[in-house]
Amino acid sequence: MNALAAIASELAARTAPESAAECMELAETLAAASDVQESALVGFIARVDESGELRRWGFPSAQAWLRSRLGMRDQRAKERITLARHLHRLPAVTELLARGELSYGYATTVADAVARLDDDDCAKAEILLLDMVGQGFSPGKVAAFGRRIREVITERDGHDQAPPGRAARV
Image (cartoon, rainbow, N blue to C red):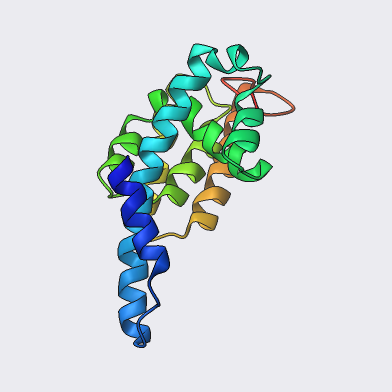
């Protein structure tokens, strides 16, 4: 962790290269590395959230901890918590994110899409949504398809709204 912090500090202190093309390449490489780092962070968040350790430290929720101690805004905290709470139900997403083969943006999009689905529907949705990622659809399009999946399941099951499933506690 100390090495990662030192490298990040060194990179932040550097002036961006003059070449825009070089900056694009560096930004893409750094973003991919950040996605892998997010995988590790979300794993830590999942463990802390599951353990209840937060309450020992006086935090009423994972969201409160992330806002207070990590300085996150609400939306970013919610996004990370949703992904953390569904990692165990999204084995392909978890593996691809950790290997740097799926961006954090796509991972959180899939997690948000399946948050209220039962385990069987979650597994099917994960496959469909990752297939869309593989076809080059944007995170926004994948999110829209995820909403449509929830609507179809709601209609199939005869509910007025999305099934409770495993909604993220945020």
